[in-house]
Length: 255
Ligand code: F6P
Image (tube, rainbow, N blue to C red; front, side, top):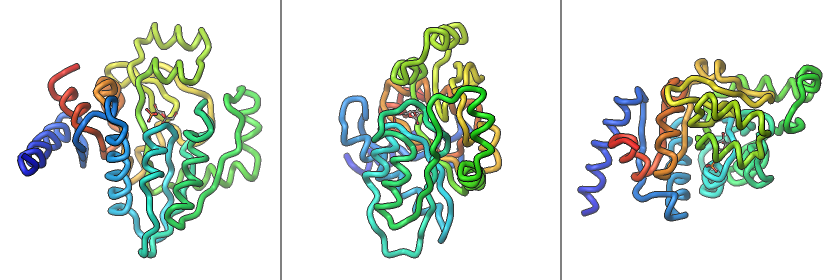
């Protein structure tokens, strides 16, 4: 029954917390691969966690993707004095407009009366553009805000799913195959043990920056993502995981 289910999740949450060395794990019922509403449930729990974390005027950096878009959709105006500043964690990573971090940051701000800043950078960036763009005053200012973020919230994807979604070049696909990439987050691709295999060239948060950020929340569910979640969390840069039952069970029982 319901109570049993809640208690069951508690055990699972503790188990995952210990296995992946996290501070907090939240599990929602179901499988977001199968039922769309589960993704919104993940979103709802992610919004709750944000509320628990935030004090008055803090900065939240976030990535794109459909899960993060669902988080934004679950946000509602609150009477609290919390007025977060939402910023994209990194420059464009090849997502559709509605799933881009810039769009999601603006949407979140609109929904909870916060503020937002955008990063206007081409996607993808050439080496040359990269070096000149980080010197642009407008970009520099937002990059500074991003690196000072109090909370980072991000999605995790399966490496090849993400590479295809981004229409990665043949060379990149080959690199991912040779390096046996399993997961993707922040534009970084990781192998089974959490080693970086490839990195998309763009501005914003670099993996190293995450260690100085107080709270890094990963939001990812669906049985098909279990292997990716495990791979990404192995390099230990996020301390909170919000996932669903199907991914959680696969994380423990193996995939
Ligand atoms: O492209 C942004 C991003 O956050 C990736 O880093 C991540 O792999 C992906 O989106 C997750 O997308 P979704 O929530 O749609 O599976």
